[in-house]
Length: 186
Image 1 (cartoon, rainbow, N blue to C red):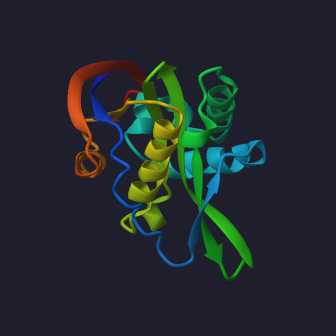
Image 2 (cartoon, rainbow, N blue to C red):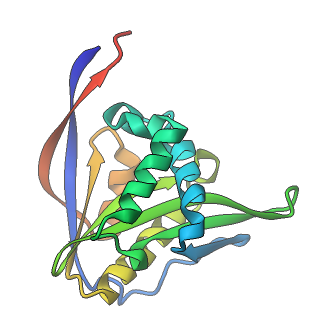
């Protein structure tokens, strides 16, 4: 194992930014609000979204199915978990004759007027369709409805596509932080 320091940006936005209309959801997709029966779907989307990404090195639990399931349970059992900022995007799958979970976002209330977005994940085959924007908008609306005035998130610097998305949605870089992780030597 090699100890590695991953550079991350802590990004913030002030609310309400949700005066803007919600971005349109692409045809064949819908959003499901938080429900405890969806925890396994959120965990599966996390795993499929992050297992081949740098975030699985920064947070090794994201590279394992059981790690994502445990993380999802831990997030939703926290006293500061905010169901109103937690959403699951699903896609109508004609072969399966049902809805396939493809995107996830979770929120925490970290202070009286502060919120934090946790793990925005879109399964790779469904990226570039605007689902990230839709999930973030609905999460921000949930934070604003709960009385939050400011929301933050963290992103690994190498994830330039995510950084561009967050900046486009009104987030700005507030701080640079470093996450220490032990990475297998290769």
